[in-house]
Image 1 (spheres, chains in turn orange, brown):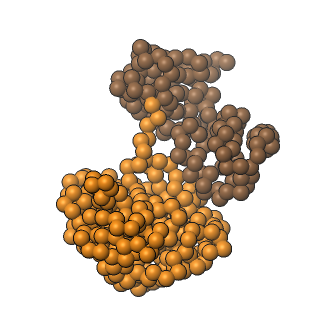
Image 2 (cartoon, chains in turn blue, purple):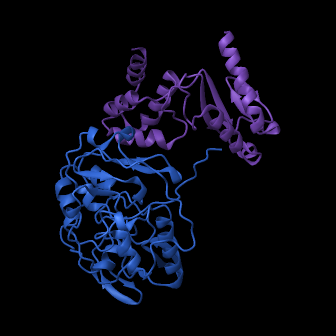
Image 3 (cartoon, one colour):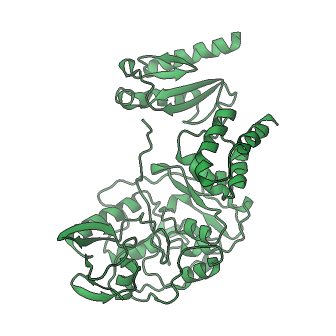
Length: 269
Length: 157
């Protein structure tokens, strides 16, 4: 079992485990939104879990959700530089999020609010202007609705729907125009969705929410140490799908959710 | 329908392996002129992939169009030289005049609008290509004239 040193503190980790989960289990909080424990290919889009890793005397920046632990690895998770990068990442996430907490169905269970308070930041970006887009809300499904204006593109619902072998949701378009959507933007009611509602549960924002608003509060108390280490599924094969989703739902994940931003250019010249 | 036959025929020439996915989509675009919803569904079925993934790929690359091209396909160059000389303003002007966005086709199918990369005539930038004709040193003011001339040509033929 390898041990690593985070901010001068030695902690134990499982071999092959990613830094983020080892740190959280030992009570060291690293902000994160898009990370899914056990994901074969960590998305690494929200950039909130950036840490510095010492490699040959030099510090290199990497995302804690994607970097596997190595024996005696030296990690700096709370330096000034890291804090600056994380704040910028969070502001970028919030700059195109439609902030409307008053009318938001998920206001009592919001990953963005939790992350903001853990990072001691306001929801409204201070240094960036808002670029929230005007996109139509999909209200067609009887049980849940999708408001793309609130989506932070963390890809959790995409990953989950894929893991369940259904893949009704995926990313479409690219760069700033990227959205999470269904095949050919078909309304949610017209795809063969079985209404498992798991996507609503993993969504850290008010983008996917239950229409029956009283049920949107899912008991997921904020705790930075409560991750269970048992039964970490390897990958999302169809046979493991239900176990996988079960795991996703039952693990009391502290800062849920996430975002991908400003990826690639939109020009082709 | 001829279009679905063309798609079937194209699929028949490939093996359903992932590395053939982009070549298949390109071939369909070449044959049919665009990648329709039906085409995406057929491709998904052929490769045993979720349709949403095909949609994700088709929308990611600007090369693919999801609407049939118009009789006069307008290609506005957004290569470096054209871009610096206001290529995006030309694109905006076409978009305004034709009331369609990038990648769209007008209702009467007479025009479609696309932005493309360099044609290799940067010396006369910014340029627009319609059919095989290059329109050199474009300006937003010249856009209306180009459209009117093409409409007239359409009517007379």
